Length: 541
Image (cartoon, rainbow, N blue to C red; front, side):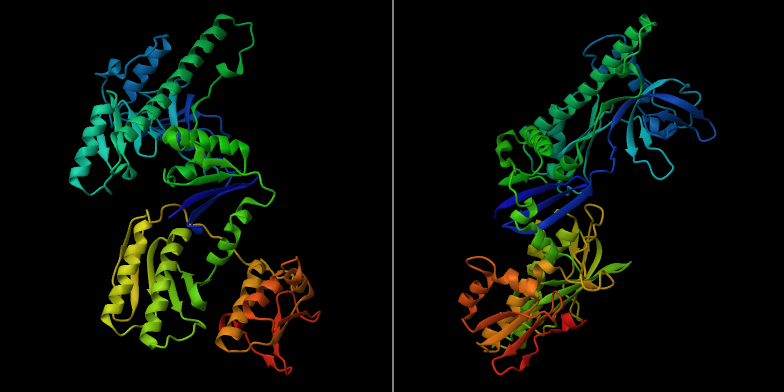
């Protein structure tokens, strides 16, 4: 199986598509204009104490001051303060063990007995600003990587509860214990399961370097601050003023890619030079031997169109999803759960009988449903109404097929065998916030008062109808009337779409424009002038 990542960077948003054997299996999209600051670390000043709230407000450069509660100072706050005091005196390469012996923060203490107005702190944003509220802060500094989370001034190693194997948990703890610096705590993430010591050691060095760079910026600021005080008549430089951004979380593109990335990817295509450099730097850090897979796309055709992503998005999202041989499923989202209804559509019956036909439709539906769960990130309870099957062995085949398909899904999930009513129940953890992709277009005739299916898929619909006429109904000669714009598109080029259809389905396929038809309307007539009704149930709704 080949895997590729396509990154489409637009002025207002960035989209990431994961393709497996050219099929879209995961899709993420986020706005670029939105300011994401969780994880950023600032050296900042206490603006105001609030004894009634047992908290304080800290200026980190936002319109509204950030909120820091006493309990968010963390158990090791005094160790952090002692360390900042030592490095502030100009001492270099101060080991964290120098701060040992500092008392833990008293959980019953108060903010006014711990901090004072104007005090300088190292803080990290843990919650984005919401509406009229500023960001939420913590003094428990942490650095998140793909496999590990590094927490200075702690000495505890924790393993993700999702790693169930006792032997693997013990192995990972032993490995981390042998490579981590003293007085550094580590959380081992789920994706670290089965990783070699070289991979973990490389990321540990990256995270430690981030901590060292953060402290280096604090030291640099302190020096500039002292210089500014020594020359009071000189204008204070901007970089000597608080707050100072000491560490900035990775860009949104890299953050989206971080949990998705796999070194086995063959290519990562990016259509923006700046983001290309960010992604290449990130891949060079975590998998230096794979940096050549990151490629800058410079084509004139939009990147998603070039890799057939746009068309797959339009066919894969929406209420109705068509898959093999005319079968389709309807996906509904309610407050409590997702409901999926599987239909055979206009699929021709298998000569072996209804049971074989139902099994074929259901197995194909299981393949498409597993893809849809990843693609839409459908979380919570999913109830699937498959076509009824009488034989227990067929129901077991369907269950096993669904379990096998879901092995590729990185979200936690649980699948139950079919109930006696033919229903399959699935629970699935949501990996990221739910994303609603609207694939409908405003109708050019009624100017948006109604909705039509995506016009990009119209020629696919026409070919399905032609295939049904020729190969299922045995009608070899007929006339198809479409809107003049559509007829012009079908007839364009040396090897036009019309010519391809004639070579595939026979020269009896005739296509003519009809100005009385609306944009996506069509009519089939046999050679006697009798109209052939090719509208199916989905189009009539």
